Length: 90
Image 1 (cartoon, helix red, strand yellow):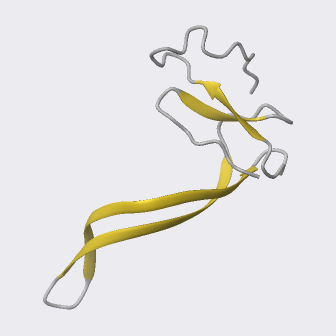
Image 2 (tube, rainbow, N blue to C red):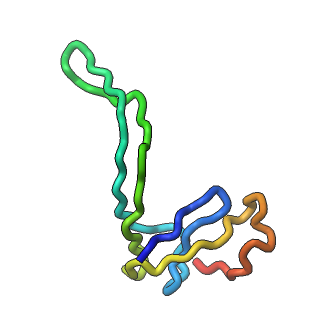
């Protein structure tokens, strides 16, 4: 099942229990990182560039449902008024 991508105007909502805030997300990312090593050999990531990212699954932390999410409008987001007439729960 394809997981819907989040945007600045949307968020996830569990279709079974209405959860809006707690999800376990499994994703695969391909990144390039700039590592800075100090003289002791300890590293710190100073810059990350995401080359590609795929969300594989989303599990609701409240009801344990897997891949039962939908996109709903975020409150206060530009264009959210009238974008989705979904009642919020939770």
